[in-house]
Length: 274
View 1 (cartoon, helix red, strand yellow):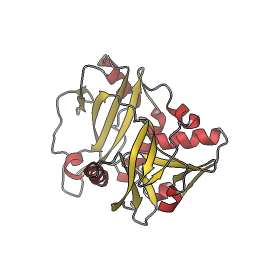
View 2 (cartoon, helix red, strand yellow):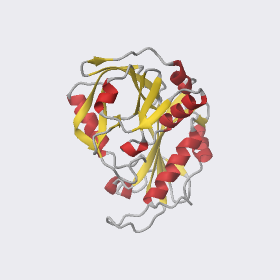
View 3 (cartoon, one colour):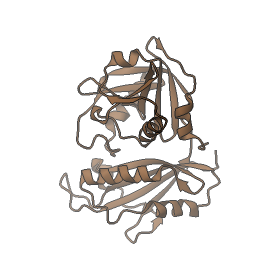
View 4 (cartoon, one colour):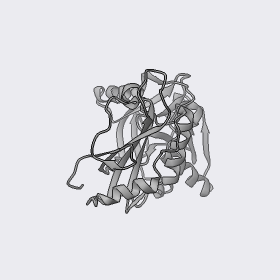
């Protein structure tokens, strides 16, 4: 850990990043009208940078936000490096939201940006107690795969998880298919085959998810993306969640226990981030 908590940077109209806040009552704050990327900054570079930018650009297209003013990732990296932080690895949240105010109807479609810079915290290696929520479902929307600022379902899921004193919550979509975990994508293994919900199941198109799937394919491992019910998950031998901070193995969902032995094929995706 380093000697700072959180640094906030705001992109001004002249393109410069400063610590002077932009207008607080913006469309991101008022309507959740925007997107964010949570990224890992290591040795002067954003990890999995191309995948983050691809997902962000896709989301901006979905929301109809113009990309002409959007910062290049190299500019973001340069600005973070200028701070000369002592931390070896950082957690970066890049928020991009529609400019202007208006009401539900936007006045304009340019992008505004902020950065949150924090010490990096690796995902816990094991999440001991997990459960499948029966009260919170993820909707089927054209932009549901994007990381929007409208994250209320995940806030409510996290609140429920804390109330129940659990380590992880697993969410279904509106059709009852397994979707994802509270802040991660979910995978499981049965008979040597890897499984994960398809993007049709209302899960986020996770950068870590994408990298894991690609690594398994490169290694010739069987990976099936599909629509799965609760009983498919309960029959697994090993269950794990992934996001850009790493991998966590689930020890127990309800009364069903799973193997938490580290998986070398998956671990290798996140090597080099401390």
